[in-house]
Length: 168
View 1 (cartoon, rainbow, N blue to C red):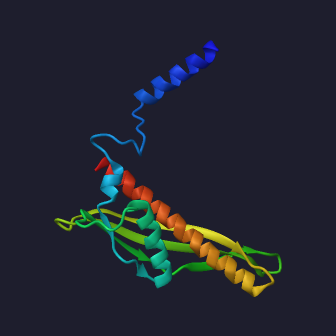
View 2 (view 1 turned 30 degrees about the vertical axis):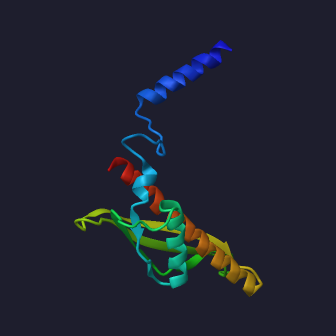
View 3 (view 1 turned 60 degrees about the vertical axis):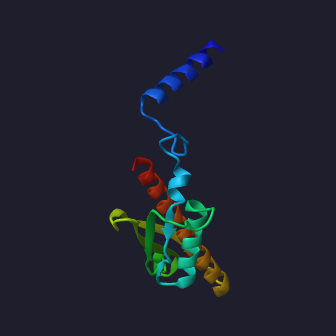
């Protein structure tokens, strides 16, 4: 029993001394939800309006769940690229058995008052899917893979923004 107390105490001392700080910790100096609720997310430019809407809605749910800010402090601009589909796994006979989808999004966080660019990055996601004998099933796998890639990009953008706002 004493060994567990020593381990817990050592872990507590280590985490408190290394500068570890919970990302979602609500303090007087840092209320993350208040900061993210001031972001206005502009319509996504890109290859497909439906996929752009899906990406934007995903980010709206994460960053501004209480709705569009009346007086935004930041604007988020996103540009979504056309998915690049390439052979991923090739069998011995030279026929592809799976494809790899690569999806890119460039995003910029801009301060509303002075239009200063605060954050400019690129998010990339790669998802593979198998080629089946049934063409309809293969197409459904492709659409699902694109949806997963968009969700991954939304997560990357979200974590990049909250990490930036935590330190800003």
